[in-house]
Length: 512
Ligand SMILES: Cc1cc2nc3c(=O)[nH]c(=O)nc-3n(C[C@H](O)[C@H](O)[C@H](O)COP(=O)(O)OP(=O)(O)OC[C@H]3O[C@@H](n4cnc5c(N)ncnc54)[C@H](O)[C@@H]3O)c2cc1C
Image 1 (cartoon, rainbow, N blue to C red):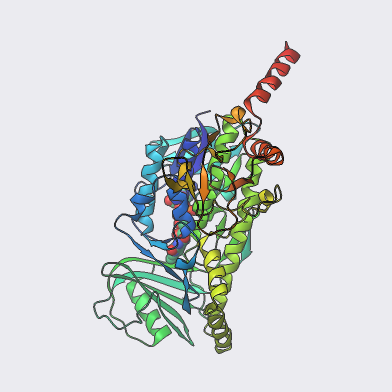
Image 2 (cartoon, rainbow, N blue to C red):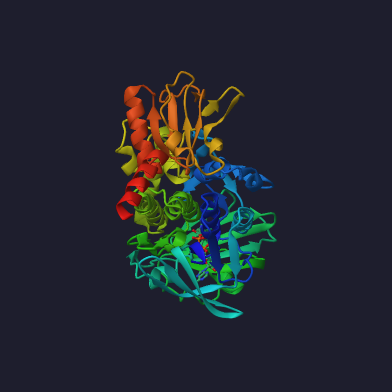
C-alpha cells in the first residue's frame, strides 16, 4: 500500500478529512485536479456547529481573524430573521468568511498535520478489491497507479468517485435557474439593502449581499425560464439582463470577480460507503445553495468520518464503526435537503405563495419557532439516533453542549479538550475508578473535573465524548453508570488492550 487512505478532491471537505485522518494516525494523500486554488468563493458563511468543530481542534482563532461574525440568519429571505444569538451554544453566531480563505486555512491545517496534497493530480479510474483500492491518476508527469486500504470521494457534486463506484445519486431534477455575480455596484442604492437585500417580484427573486469590501454578490433565481446548459459561461451582460428581467431595474455593475450559474437539483447518494470506497461532502449530497448549508454539512461529514476511518486502518475500530458514518450522516443530509427544498418553494414568485410566506413570517416571530429553526440551520440540532438508543441520558448522541470543565486550573470549554482528536472521559472528583486503562491509547481520562453549564439542568457528573465531540455516554459513575460507561467505551473505542492481548494469545496458541 502507498497510503492508508486516498482522499479524492482537495476542496474544504477533502482537506479537513485529510487533517482528521492524520490526527488519527492514518497515512493520507489528497489528489486535487486543480494545479492552483480557483480563488473563487462559493460559500461565505460558516455555521455555529462548524465553529465548534474548529474550536475543538484549536484552529478557530485563525478563521476568526479579520472576519466578521453575524448573529442572524435568514430563512427563504423572509422577515423576521433568525436570532442565532439566542442559541445555547459556545458560538451563537455565523462567521462570514470567503470559502477561498476557509480552503486555504484547511489545506494548511492538513499539511501541518503531515497530509500529502498532490495538486494537478486527477483521479480517472478506480478498482476496489478485497483488501485494497487501486486509483488511476493523471498528472502532468503522466499516468500512474496508487494503492491504499480506503478511498474517499470528496470530489464535489459531479463526483467521479461516486460514478466509478456505481453509487446512485437519487433526487429531484433542476426546476429553477439561478445566476451569481460578485460585482462592484458603483451606484449604491440601486438594489435593496439588507442582509441579504431581497426583492421578490412576479418574475423571480433577487438577493444582494455585501460579501467583501466594495464587492456585492448579486443572485437571481427564476422559476419559469428554460434551463440553460450549466456549463455555458455567464457574462456580465447576461447578469444585467436577468436582473432587469426579474426586478425591472437597470443596475450598473462592473468588475465582475466571479460569475456562475446553478440550479436547485437536489440529490443524495444512495449509500455513503460501498466496500472500501466512501463519499463525503457535495459528492454525497447537493441542493440549492440557500441558508449556507452545503459546506457546513460536508465539514461535519469529514469530522464524523475521519476518526472512524483512522481507527479502522489502525485496527482498533469496533464492528460497525465505519458503517455508523453513513448511518449518522445520511439522515443529517436528509434534513438539510428538506430545509433547502422548503426554502426554494417559499421563494417561488407565484402570488399564491404570498400567503404561505406571510404565514411563515408570523411563525418566525414566535420565539420558539425562531429558536427551533435557528438550531436546525446552525447544525446544532443533530442527534445521532443509533447512539441515543444506547443510554438514557438526553445528551447522548448530541454535540457536547456549551459547558465548562474545571480540573482545578479554572474552567475551560469542555469541547476544547478534544484538540488531539482522541476520545475524552471527564470524571468528577468523587468518582470510583471506572477501569479505563485498557483504552488509554484511544481515550484521554481527566479525573477530578467539575462540569458546569450555568442554569442548565441536564449537566451530568461525568461525560464520555467521541473524537468528533458527540456525547457517547453521560451520567454518574456508580455501579450502574460504570456498566453503561464500559458498554459505551466498547461500542465506540473497541476492545480494551487487556482483552485484545487475551484474544491475540488465544489466536497465537491456535495457530502454533
Ligand atoms: C453560490 C453558492 C453559494 C454557497 N454558499 C454556501 C454557504 O454560505 N455556506 C455553505 O455551507 N455552503 C455554501 N455553498 C455550498 C458549498 O460551496 C459546497 O457545499 C462546498 O464547496 C462543498 O465542498 P466539497 O469539498 O465537498 O466539494 P468542492 O468544493 O466541490 O471540492 C471538490 C474538489 O474536488 C476536485 N475534484 C473533482 N474531481 C476530481 C478528480 N477526479 N480528481 C481530483 N480532484 C477532483 C475539485 O477540483 C474540487 O477542488 C454554496 C454553493 C454555491 C454554489
